[in-house]
Length: 379
Image 1 (cartoon, rainbow, N blue to C red):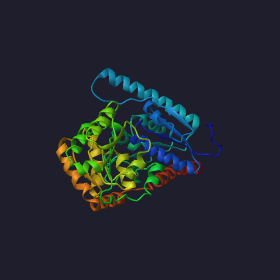
Image 2: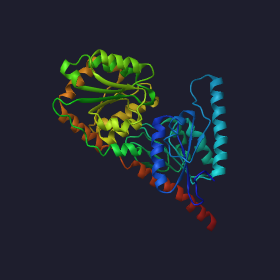
Image 3: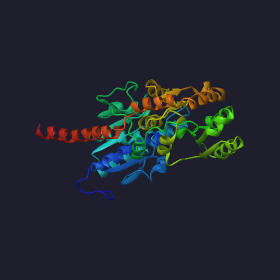
Image 4: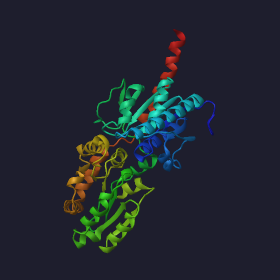
């Protein structure tokens, strides 16, 4: 029995690749299921351990996995060996812990547990965060009881049951969503938030300061910039803004990002599923620059879903210039009413109850195991 688990508690295995885009929805579901009396185990890779301190799991298990890509036969063989090792790990865990349900959130670390669950006849489902399903979830779709989708516009997947739940967001996002959009008053500071998610935002490191320097003196004086950056880029940003006398805070990571989103007048960011969902639930206008090398162009589809409701402006990275960004910033700073309308439009597309919806589906899938057993016993 897992540490802290009572005899009557149901156990849920949550399997997620080790990036924030996969881990954060799993964390949100974990909180909701714990409120309902479940015991949670997180199955992830080494990268996922970065989030283990905040993830409310009874136990965290590192599952061997690897991405299959390219044509190098040696690398392919190593990846398959890692996935096989993860599969055997997962079989042992499922047999030992007997989870009532296994939930996958995408990324290759989800493949071994979900495949093991399928072979052991354990109840399982997957949650797809992006508007375009990832390769791992597409491959698993026919092997699970249900597919939960984060977006209405999600690409077609072959599965017996597809349910649009939305993307679960963490409790601190729900708390931030209670704060009204801070419509800017004349001569008040304009709070600009710039961030990039797990793929980084190096394109913004030079682009945003280059755009800001093109603003007039009055506009620069009003700006308050909060910007996420990679490694040594933090020092570059701090010096770049200092040189043009713009108030700025730069860091490689902000552990209170939902609160910072809630406080901003405008966000400039990538378009990962979690980012788009959090912007929508909190209700903040944004300029979305989809990561151009994202597999299946999922970020472009995510961005389109938010832009369709009027809550975001989308621009491809190849079209993003300092001149365009400067003009857009100047225009939006002068139009607080327009930004407030975009914030309202963004919030209309949000699904703050996605964790509850997904938890309901999880419990339905888990309950079907008992129904199946009853039918088999009576036949």
